[in-house]
Image (cartoon, rainbow, N blue to C red; front, side):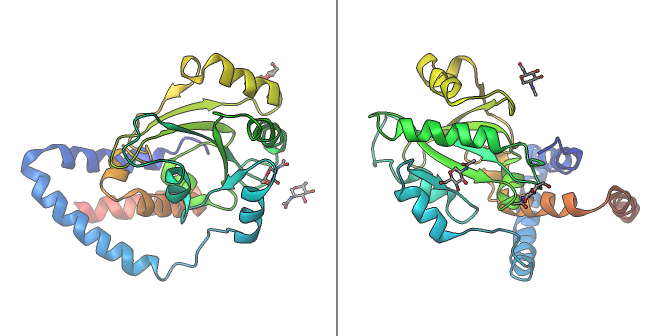
Amino acid sequence: MRFNPVSTLLALPLLAAADTPDYQAQFQEYLGQAQGYYEKLASKIPSPNKFDPVAAAAAKAGANKIDLIGLHNWKDVLYEPVTPGSTIPEEWWVLITGGNKTCLGHCGKVEAAFNETAAKFATEPNSPYMALLNCDNQPVLCNAWSSPVGALWIFEMLPEPSPINIFTKRLNLTTTTSDDLIQLQKDGYRNVANEHDGIFHPFNGFFAQNGLSVPVGYLLWAFGLLPSWAFMILMSLFSRSMM
Ligand SMILES: *[C@@H]1O[C@H](CO)[C@@H](O)[C@H](O)[C@H]1NC(C)=O
Ligand SMILES: *[C@@H]1O[C@H](CO)[C@@H](O)[C@H](O)[C@H]1NC(C)=O
Ligand SMILES: *[C@@H]1O[C@H](CO)[C@@H](O)[C@H](O)[C@H]1NC(C)=O
């Protein structure tokens, strides 16, 4: 997904308020109110999230052992192989992919390379767990993570409530092959991937820590649907009502 200036706009005053001791109590109060509104509203929004549980079960049980993740199951899926008390992380490779809507039809090749890699990993011990996140089907989760399509996100899962490291790497949609991905595992992704430490981090980030990831995901998804002129009008109404 492209860089979204709205997310920065929304985040700045929020962060400023959260960091000032004088405002912290007030911020908590606003947060409580906002969550109340959000819960009422969320029950009325028709769900944009598509998930086919039969296809997901087939993919998991299939030779490639790929999990399909969505807003409702991603945490359970990622924590599933983690044993309580373990100090060695379980490694998950998640490909952020999309179809005609979010990837303009360009993700097929990299997805095929990822699937082929999963087939090889499935026969090798100590290889990463593999999952796909399709942003056409799961726009809210992709917005909540602010995750661009065509990226590989590597999660180092430890038991709750340990912080979780995530490394991200953009893949070249036209050239990436399964051999490249296997080489990446051999060479060690930590040397070439970026450590994720932003406010959108799904476990350690500001939004996740304050239970705001899902509302923020819906908000950004909704803003993404607005044409830009509508957004400008909304912003000017909003700023006028603040004065
Ligand atoms: C995506 O677009 C291509 C070309 O326009 C079309 O052939 C294909 O059926 C579309 N796929 C989906 C899933 O809509
Ligand atoms: C990759 O595997 C998943 C899960 O089995 C499947 O849904 C998807 O269509 C596959 N993608 C490609 C490009 O083969
Ligand atoms: C992908 O790789 C090709 C060939 O090396 C290069 O021409 C292209 O610019 C790359 N694309 C991106 C987005 O980096």
